[in-house]
Length: 412
Image 1 (tube, helix red, strand yellow):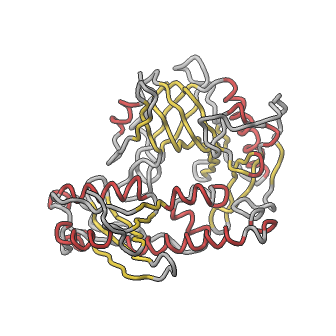
Image 2: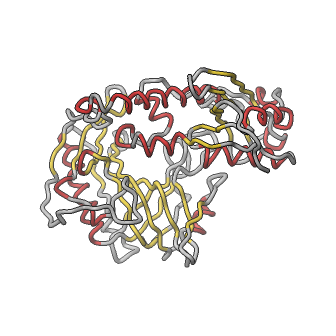
Image 3: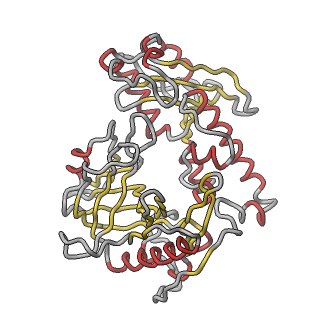
């Protein structure tokens, strides 16, 4: 099906959904010239009975099972959704990977043609390109709302759409003003020049140049591109009255690594859980000696700043050299879950075929057995990961967690 005409307005929309069904839809139709609201619509959606009966009695966002029971089905609101979306520019946060897919599936389930966008604007990808994670961390909506002091994310469709629009307005203002006030707005970004920074307390030979290797992202550096004397640790705000340690590299950019062909030692273990009772998912891989040098340097620096800031927690090394089941050092790559009632993996997981093409895997639910079937011992993976410093005061432990942003599984 092709579009015959462009329909006026940008349709910013958001879904509340789990791996099986959509339970809320919200959309704001925005004038692309004046940014005025042309129309808006939101509704809860009743799922099939087999899903409704297993729905939580009350969710964190306030939606109850009774609310959904008295709401229209998707078939009953499909015309309205279609009218808002078809032929218009679609916009939203992470919609390409999530919302667009779910909308098409929902229409397919009721035997109808799905609406077609004139164009799609994913604000997450747009902000990664134009705004950058060095200003506001991972660029998730909750992080951006906190950065601009817009309040807590409601996890309700229409509220989240409005917050998305406000975030984009704020980001646009910052980018608009930066050329006029570079010494203020560019320097005083997410990483403040007043933060406490210290040089790395190690001396290792490094290359004088660190060009980004072809095939790696500017956001992620390969370990041989790291200039060890230019690694820093900084105390940055994390929540009101609290600070956390952030590892930085040249020009105060968050230190993130891209590593090729890491060999899997162990896949995820279903026996460990986080404080919310959700599975704590890690894959154990075999790092190269040069990667270990970089991680050890980061460990030394972060530990130093941790102690200097008054922490009494036991520091756990990021490189495990005491694993009795293996003959070499190992590291853990953490696969985080979204903070939702029906969590999915935050990590983007790809499979590389024999021709070298990467294919994104779409997961509907957390399934440790399914992950284990992908990350079999001996499998090679490419990994993009951040280095997040943690300090659990109640458990009296601190260290660096390697959080996987992207994993590419090589073909056997």
